[in-house]
Amino acid sequence: PTRITQRSKSLLDVCITSCFEKIIHSDVFHIGLSDHSLVYAVRKINSLPKCNKTRETETCKLNRGRNYLFYEADVNAMWSCWKTMFLEVLDSHSPIRSKRVRKRPSLPWLTKDIRNKMLERDSLKRLAMIKTDDVSWAKYRSSRNRVNVALRKAKGAFYASQIENVTGNPMKAWKTVNDIV
Image (cartoon, rainbow, N blue to C red; front, side, top):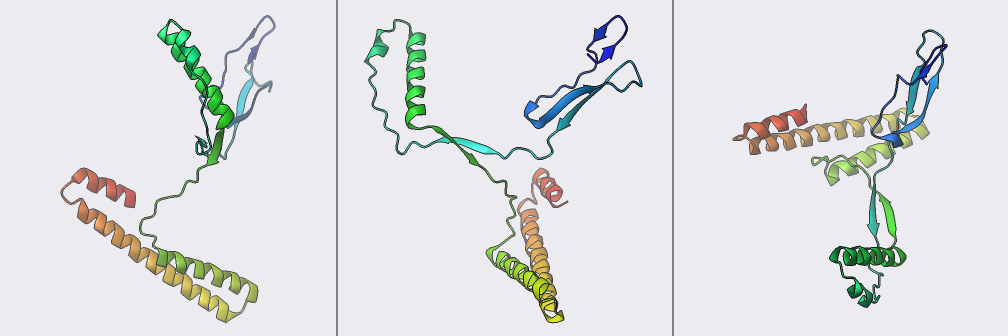
């Protein structure tokens, strides 16, 4: 109950969610400031990783008799029987496996050459942090600046070509402009 009086207890204040798996804990806290109690829910900040559920069907062998299906008089009963049997066999021979799906942002302007420059920049930074001398830091800063210039040029060229491709279509042009912003 969220409202407790001398004569009654009522549930007036509620927390409603459509994704209960994102809620860690919920409770009612009686604070004494009002005749209503505080209703709260603690939400998970990190979302669950996305998983695809698949079956490993390469090694699956489904050789099971189907003769007794024809003894059913009703088509719906036959379908239900077949579906139950099929899922049982499938679960025993080819169980469902969950596989995490990584969310990678699509960056079409990020080429292999730029990635290699980024790896070089990162290794130079690690080296500069270990050595702590001016020469190592200068090499790192130079590499960092080259990566930033290459990224700016590649991104600019990509969006310039995108805008050039949609010159006749204002809707697509604005979508491209909004992607840039």
